[in-house]
Image (cartoon, rainbow, N blue to C red; front, side, top):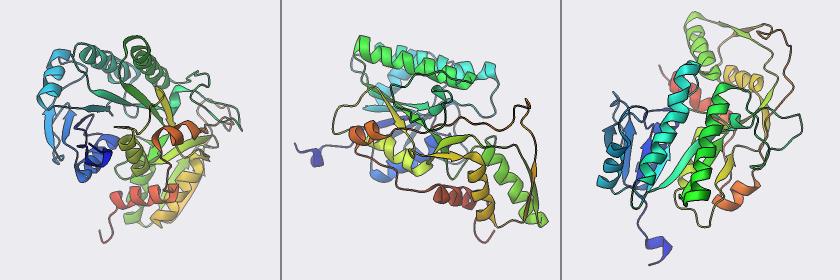
Length: 317
């Protein structure tokens, strides 16, 4: 059977109601994959494919194994977890505990599905200006979220190395697009601009935001994940996923203001700790990802911001 005639893998998306999960479900359904959406609660807006309510932090791992077997799942994409809007205590089960339970589930299965896990650029910590981060760069996370995501990645890579698990971690940059989480920087700024659109103007209080970060269009992230479902060649256990460019958060906020066309006054405020402008950055070396997945980002941050704003304030509304 040729590659072209092989059936598409059946995919379970964990965290299907989240920012990335929902976009991924839409893309997989459009491509014709058999799809199982998994989340804690059934969403008010239905998702494509089959849906199962399952809490990865509380429900027994054996229950998930039975669900995956019943739906004949070939690949799991773990898009569950979170940072924005969660306390440090809530982050532990959401980003680490559920991965421990997921690995327990897979290791108990006779033929476990492939696992594609969504990691984070924050696993690396901050690097000096001019540094390109490879997958082998030392990881020294500077936040609780980054530390938990790194611990989850290490559990997965240990399972790959020691027990032969078929798995890949994609360390994503800061994803931007339609459906941006309300608690994120861009989500908060978009909400304030939407209010200002009605009021005739907005005032945004901004810290220096001079640190330069890796960003990525939501749809580019989704396309990379789909490329990782059944890659044409073997992959290392961890791959970076971003634009391969460092961009200041301030620049992205300014793109959002420009896209909104809302008259905006920016009030400069100092950083909370009084430390002044940040000087560290994130910039990925994307060469390993491009080789392994035969994928490159094709969309701009301007496109991402435009789609974010269009979802907040649709044309004609």
